[in-house]
Image (tube, rainbow, N blue to C red):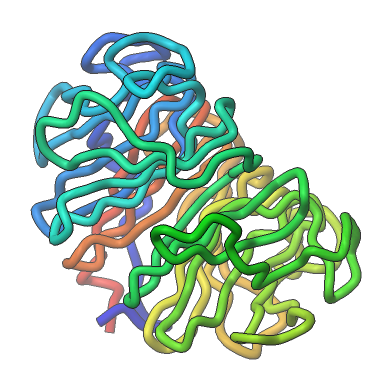
Length: 305
């Protein structure tokens, strides 16, 4: 189990992309959100290529599984996909199709087109809880909504009080994490903080950052991907600082666990990390956006106790 003592190797292994920016099958272009399944297959929202790519374990190239028909707003097209949920049990995946301002449900196998399930939303990221509710951050309206499949309106569960930095406000919310109690963790990007909204709360709690933009261990810079482990330690893709931070529960500063060596493309460097995820072995995956690659950082057994 991942805990406060877990350490990862500092040199990442490229598991997708990394062959410069491009639209070849071995390339990515500004990847953002992604999903890692139990088979260690990685599903990537390949933003500027307007496609979703499936990259199997140890593969040297990916397979386009949605958006093969070029940029556009038809049901068989995507325009700036920015995040993805994969639900193998129910045989679909859900795409945050940003520039089309819609959320699309797409058949998992053999699907040639998607169905818009949430229209007219400035979606930035999405996630799903164990009950099948979908949570979507609206970057322009500065709120997060929860949707039950089939609903047409959704329910505001964070923000919704205009753009701002009060505890009941957000400023460009992006990545999300939902725990088993349906508490919502929000990357409040332009406030440089992570907020936790307990279910049915009227305002959030600052659990990381909130000290202005900066690179000290008490600060964040345009945070993106977030994960919470079973001990409620928080992991943050600190995009503007090119590092991954672990922020222990109830502590007022974080610790650099990956990166922090300046912007670059070396194995121990990142260039604006976006999505992050753990696989079933506890290895840490990072979407290294401007290096156009996905990196895997293995648990370092020599340092983990």
